[in-house]
Image (cartoon, rainbow, N blue to C red; front, side):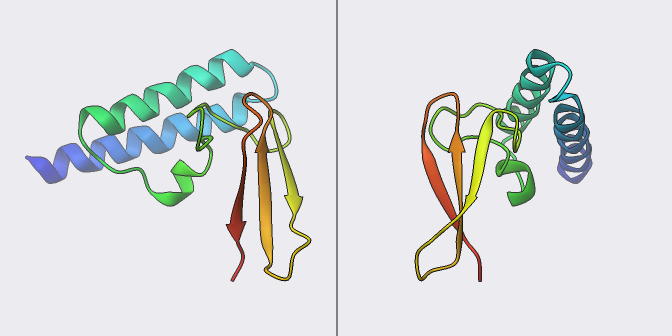
Length: 99
């Protein structure tokens, strides 16, 4: 039973995050709600979200951040190549190292 539940939950999380990203420009509240539902599915069924789904959430305030809409993305100016993502809701900035 567990593999079936896992597969359905992963599909639903993917659909909700895709919908949140596509609706981010037109209706930010709806996109926040879809992302919250995806997060709730992962916690209810104790499934870890894949990296490509986790990266659309702020690390500090755990809200949905759409690139260019409610977050700012900059290339790092240090010797280590990185991308800096700043959440416009809480102001937290975090980096992703580019290998």
